[in-house]
Amino acid sequence: MSDKTCGESVSDGIWNRKPCANPAKVERNGKFYCGVHDPVRLAKLRSKQDAIYADRFEARNKKHQIERAAPELLAALQALDDACCADLEDRENRITFRKALISGRVAIAKALGETT
Image (cartoon, rainbow, N blue to C red; front, side):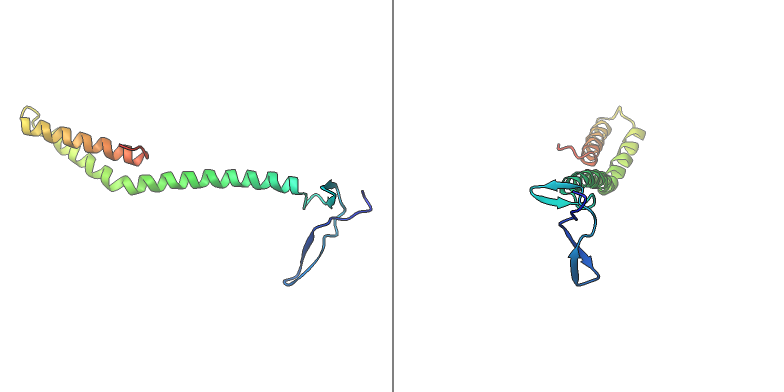
């Protein structure tokens, strides 16, 4: 196989293409490939890169989800702080506190991507 060359074509500048000059290392479906253009190696590399990009996308998506929910979380925390400082013996203050607690829980669930 050492007398054979890779069957892929590579760019020769901007417009032209020429055959790859690397010696063939593997044969796939009757076609010879060098180590650079081996389709099996390229498929493994692509799947590994796809997994990396999927992880990055997921992390970025979660970050944006939390950033979008930040104003709502802040408002819920301020409402809880106001309600905690109030006298909870009063029925109206207890209702306000419960509403603030519920809105805080909803905001947290939204930030975590949970449905309520």
